[in-house]
Image (cartoon, chains in turn orange, red):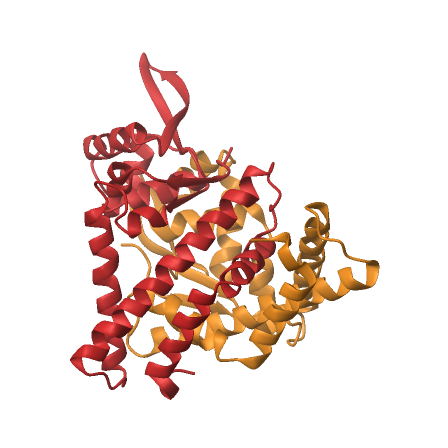
Length: 199
Length: 199
């Protein structure tokens, strides 16, 4: 009934679908249940035609599918579900390496800058230069983690579901990150900058 | 419309509610939408009375609440939603430190053992002794991470939503873990045991 597996999103156009709040919520609901456009509209407090429009975009992007249809008083009722249990945007898009992914990469950059600004608000003393450096470290740390999560998930799910165990996936991600010198260096630099601000 | 914030579950009786698959799915749906028992029953393919039973347990545990009621043909229709956007079971329960949490702690232990066994299946060469040691390291790593995630989330959400930025929360968790010697030692020991098995 519920959908299984992980989908790595490598197409920038599909990644853009996730920028919309309603579509993100539709996807969240359809990961756990099969629902009709009518049910989804009620659940999200939107009108049916708007929901059908979003579902059609998600279906074209391969993120949802019609699980079954039903004839009810001469009308075809479609039950939708998500095509995967978890959707992960590829780190390659977050790095802006793929044509068309520049917008997504910029969003990640902005988030990292916002994160650095929040740090100054809670007491980190950072000059303008240092602030930019911290933002870049946060961005790098995020991308490194995305890369390792993606590779670990692919390995876990490609080998016939070798990792049904969530604890194992987490352990492997931790180990694979820790083994990378660039990861350790990035974390250590951040700790230097932020010192005892956080504990 | 959607619920906000993080709830740390410290009551073992409430944590037990999450052991049931249907209740977990109800909670997942109600994080993103307000829904009636009728809608939930249709979405999960269960009968309404079973859903109402589960909702009543979740409501007693403080995990869902009636967001609004509506009178429809003389019947009261209740719309439910989750009380938080994210539910985290406290690491104290996972460690079995709280009376009544022994069962939950045993579950974590079993998961760690399963994870170690999966590792041998994908090529890790571990004697019986080593297997138990790896399982214990995996368990410790998991608990340490749970502890740091919980403390970081509490700090982030208690200070008037200082961390609306998901990237910042992740960065702080990474840094706070890395600063702990017991964390680094645990990861390094696991790497020693597992060597080049994973990359």
